[in-house]
Image 1 (tube, protein in one colour):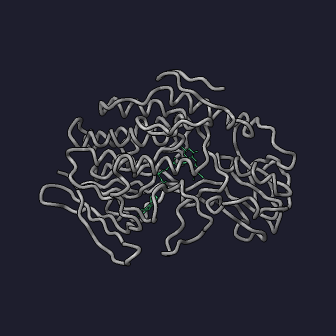
Image 2 (tube, rainbow, N blue to C red):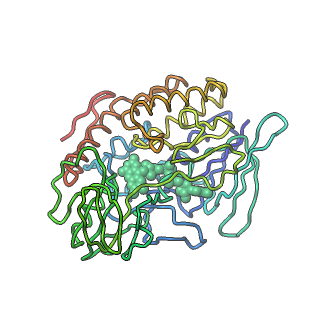
Image 3 (tube, rainbow, N blue to C red):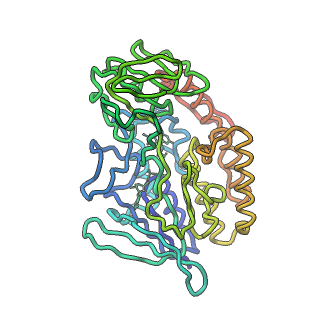
Length: 422
Ligand code: FAD
């Protein structure tokens, strides 16, 4: 009987715990969560910087956020988001949904809140590999080390800001902020704001700032310019070439005077608690070596839930957990280390040939349907309905086409393959 440690009680950790608690081959499930509440990303706080215990604030949630995907694909495959007349929900509804999910599956009472994992290290046991996990109870200050057979890493990857190299950024004479610390637009009232990055957060926040800021310059390198008609005080520009004093120069030769550089440049994978003997390396934001973006190839009794992005996140978490649990209980066998390594190398070659950079190693997007099928087919677990990917694609396109209005749409799933939207 296996003892499992789950690190984090965001959507990925809750889903992991739910399946492990139902799994006969698992005798013990410890869910260690550094925060005093569950939900991870979906917890909103006005605070930035560090929490009361000196830990970096984890959440990057801002006050006005509504989901960028419809609720019809935001739930778990067997536990959908409850009915409502809207498809795109505020963050507080998603947090309430996760609370409901955890309560209904008996997960909440098992979570050890305010328990910060500090070190994970493999060791040899009498009949195979084991893990020592060291964690600190933030309320009592007591540090403890406990032994496990399996470790599930579910610590999220939207909390460590990626700061790009831009000549002159360090010397910039105005304010510099990352979207991780963004909460409300008022801090930018009457300012000339340079927003760098046009991912989901960059676009949403740039639009939100137009209501209070003097001018918003949205700098990005999207191949296709969003077709959204933005308010007049938002101008799109190519990449920033350099910053000088309070001037920004762009790749098209133009210049703008600005007050704030607002970095919406994304996040870094970060596993500060993994000892180097865990064998996991993050380089150019590629986490290696992971088989199917899940299994630590050096130590297959460690897995990562939630690494890929541009996915139907909660459903993918569920599929990844079901996949891995079936390898634990012997329903199928993972390939041997050489085969896993060959698979990953082939995947990298294939992605590179299609123009993906190393930084995009875990970006699914157009690959998500194939990825889901490969997990369900290899492990024999039930697949995700094709309609999920179809809605994801439809919503993502509408995001680019009409950022100001796309959240008015309401989706309705007809069957596993079809949906309507009105
Ligand atoms: P998290 O939610 O980050 O949870 C990780 C948990 O691990 C946290 O509770 C954290 O406290 C805990 N933890 C971390 N380190 C430790 C440690 N050392 N010890 C103990 N506990 C630890 N996705 C969508 O599908 N739709 C959206 O509309 C959407 N909007 C988003 C908007 C924003 C602003 C952001 C930042 C992300 C958004 N996402 C969205 C992505 C979202 O993060 C994922 O969907 C999902 O919630 C991630 O869940 P997770 O469990 O992997 O990570």
